[in-house]
Image 1 (cartoon, rainbow, N blue to C red):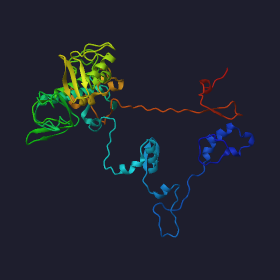
Image 2 (cartoon, one colour):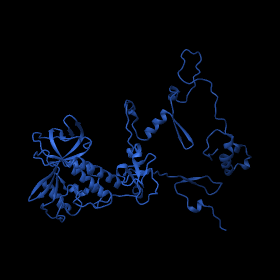
Image 3 (cartoon, rainbow, N blue to C red):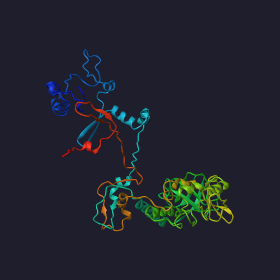
Image 4 (cartoon, rainbow, N blue to C red):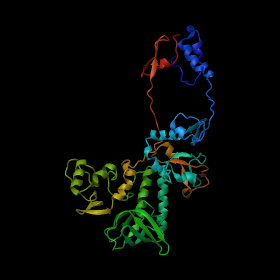
Length: 456
């Protein structure tokens, strides 16, 4: 009997009881898909026995026999229950393992994972908006009647603005310059309690120091702690300070604020002027930190820098060069000396060190911020991100038109890929008439084959 239906349960087949003259393919399809379904045989089998551990002293083993050794050994295993719509799903441990393998996870490491006592849950959403949603307000200045959107995508402009405003308040509270009171190989000591400012990952900059190992140098904060007895904050940094004998200079907060203000200007769709950028020294022309230019100026020697600039014809500062023409460094041109990890600027016939430990800055900005998107500082947006108007309560200027969140907010990160697609290559079957068998092909049917029509 050919298969004319996807129905596979045991059933009584009425088609086989039809007279031969009526056993056409059309009737077979009708009976298989309509009538036979109502004549399914009972699927419940009466079983007398028990499930669980076997009684070794029993004269008769009445333990229920399972179809697989795993199910036999774990008859009373708990099952994972889930309900999708109106359909209930049960998954055993084997089902879970099969899904793990399908996702490409190494199931041979399960004993190692099983020893873990804590697990991290890091979905690509703003956790604060999910957990502390009551601190956020939907603030629409143009339409105070608009409805809040509780599933949305991060608005880069709002995020950059709030970060800049929050840190600007920090600078106003603690002042820009924080005098250095102590040094060790991996720490800097300042006065007051600034442990809340210098958190892990914070990039600090030292200025006004006669100590060459820290002057004009970036450092990455590992942690910080406050000593209330001495009223001192100790900042642990990941870089090594070679000279700890000369203790002077200041940590400036203004440099990091300038970075945040530049990112805000960019994220909100405005071009960034050179006066807003923190390491350009008022150059003109193409944005220095476009990825191509950053690669061009990143060279181990001056000769390599000249060769790269001559070959590319890039405007590395001023003036531009013609591809293939010899280039002699001129005032205000920039070179990232990768050998010494220093950003240098050419002025008065010499290369002057602008910043040390420049790789710290490159690691923070390359591939993530405005100079790596486009030379005009445009960040791609879409209607969904533009319609996200959630603000933290500290940034709401008019509470009379603001709507406080009543539900957890699911705000996906700006660059999260939310779409997923699959492609199915169908196999189509054709036949000339009812008297012929079907022939398989990958050719799709045309419209007139799918839509009934007549010659009337």
